[in-house]
Length: 491
Image 1 (cartoon, one colour):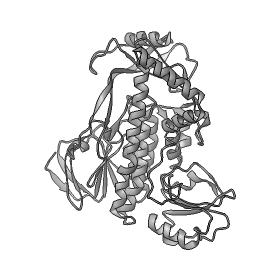
Image 2: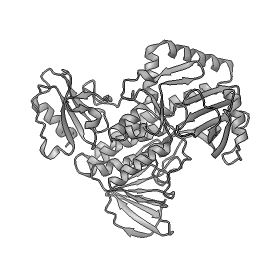
Image 3: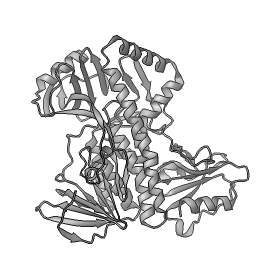
Image 4: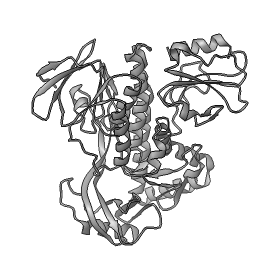
């Protein structure tokens, strides 16, 4: 993709394309780290209620907690502690080893509202009604051609560009990346409605015969309805009315709860696709630009937000000269396998949900019985759906904790995820460790904390809440070893 136009030497070393949740979190993280960033968005400035996501999982809430946003978001919705799938399969979210042992039901626009507020407070520049029409890169930077609301094309120069611009990503197309995959559900509908009768649960899901429906409460009198009818698979632009939504809901749930006053109705199809690479030179992909999944398990938006949490601190470290360029390669190494795993798990769930032949129905019954009965199997399923169970690859010979997520452990000064606010590394040491808490020039990017307990492991936690380095109290945690680890990871 090429374009020409007025050239501007942008002072912003990073351009983020797309102002959905992924782009907003990433832009805010970069700005918090002192990296000037511009966010380019094709749409007019508007927080839309037309987004599909409505569930925020435990790992995403932990990441938002590390930015001081989780409690505000919790106030916008309702929580559930049980996920029911295939009628028989029940997952107890209350057993999750997290400060957030539940699924938060809240519309995506509430997530976007909080993330946009944070990004603006941190000084992110927003360019709305601005469409990417060309991209070229060389060894020193990227030229991004942007058509503004007046129709004029301006070329902006940046050190790096991140495409968080959705499944029809202009950035992905511009760098020539394919987006292989399949349509897993050919025709779904969405509707926001009011109900005359309140469902028993915040989230109601069921399938019967050829019909499937789900109703989620937004807590403000509006309900999100999603469903499909295997007998009526049509194009995304086919007309949709409330009578069809009510009919499918009645078949799947036994009632339509007196559905009325739809504020919007929409059809879409659900794809499973993943870009083969999340990085091409100085250009990166995140969120739906990098991967799209079936809606089963509600993992799409959550996976994108965690992409952003992984990439943001790395980009900031490289831009500010505190880390080598090679650090950016770990984004592909760590996040691409997670995207692939989410494709596999969400796709498996939707295929089992739609199972028609007796063999697949038998498999579904067997899977449900096994997961319900086997505690390790249930814990594994919960860890994957909630996002807390993913572990990043570690270099050979690393401590067993390297690459693992750190829960919100207690520190002498408070909680870990409070200490992570500001995008800093956190070094957690035993109480008696001889480590100075005054890190001098590093204090803006490293916090030294002590365990509240008598634990004797020393752990260096990355800004995204994963272990960068660790050592047991076997002589390896002397001051020189700790300093070497800090120098290698923090700079």
